Length: 124
Image (tube, rainbow, N blue to C red; front, side, top):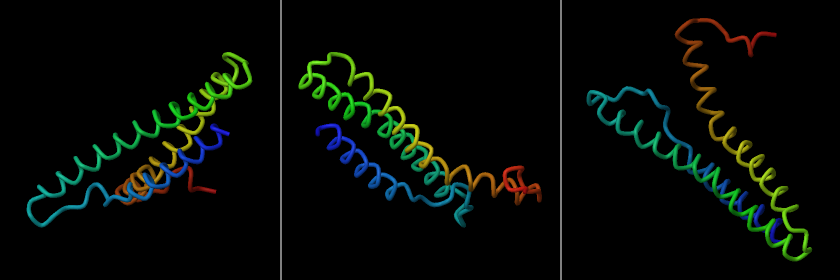
């Protein structure tokens, strides 16, 4: 039960983080010499680093606690702790992929605009 609760709580926190991660594009020039743009880029980078750290550690802690509680309840010492570690790593990789995906797509589009070519992923 605690694993389901942990997964539910982690997913709710992840949704909140995903909504908060909607930031302005990185390289928009400002009319005041780019100072404000540079500050936004720094804050965006710090926000992204904080979110990535949280998306790694929160599922691991929640799933470890859930695995420990299940192991304690069923008396199956390391089994569910090991399973919970792999589950937490899978959740972390999935969520970080979805956090970084918009940034990678915008970088790809900027590169296409500069070079005038489509990337291999778009050719069919």
